[in-house]
Length: 346
Image 1 (cartoon, rainbow, N blue to C red):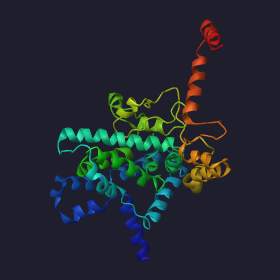
Image 2 (cartoon, rainbow, N blue to C red):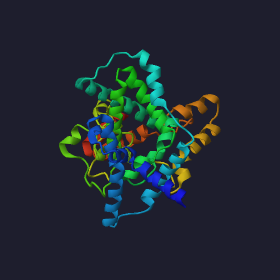
Image 3 (cartoon, rainbow, N blue to C red):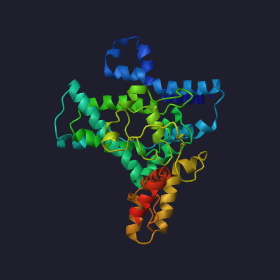
Image 4 (cartoon, one colour):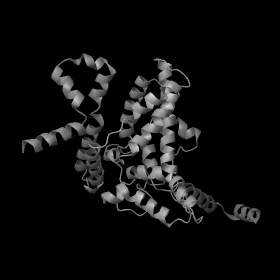
């Protein structure tokens, strides 16, 4: 019985990231708060704490539904169990591998920190963009998009191999671009904390556009758009904190009052079934590979975007978005303008 209690206690400590904070309190020496490791250790419980507050607010507003949290927390527990037997050290591996190939040497200055953050955001954009545009990577990322509601527990809903894939892309780019490892870890903490917060639900923050601040940074509103399956919103807002690269690559999309967000992925899914949420996309990829004629088509299913089909009947997000935009444009044309366009098309 005591072992079960200890296990439960340890899991709570792990969930709330309390190890460093407990160590700090036990030591009674708060001078470590002047260091970066001390600050990160003290702030790590912030996101899990907000998750609990969000759930309490949902209860208070009589909007709490177990179904909105059940699968995301089950995924967290599954990843914790699997993680006991599988460990990844890709960040350290990439630092060691690419340090000798650095294109430009960094320095511990404030302006280099800004440069490093912009590089990090670029690397995050690349990883995230590929996760939506390469079918195999989408299989790893889709678990995070499967929930059909938005709340902070969604930040824990990840396929266990997505983290190593993301670290491989982001760390490699940053180290090659001259981001010092110590600065990289600081950026990863800041970006990870903000990346968790932007999943906050409407029970905690109703309108999360943040006014003028939303013109500079990526807000929870932007990330709610990113998690939407509405055609206009699909495959947009790939950045995490600075939305600079979404604007550069034309993937920036603000939330529109007239288009209510529908969360989830486009295929029919049982969002309350762990196996469908966690392994569903891998299963359907395998089915497509098996059914595809020829080796080349089988390989294309792995690397082409979700929705690509060997017959040419593609249903990719880009095509769906373009078709809806065209239909919307045509619906607003009347009389002479429509006649002119039809004549030109002939």
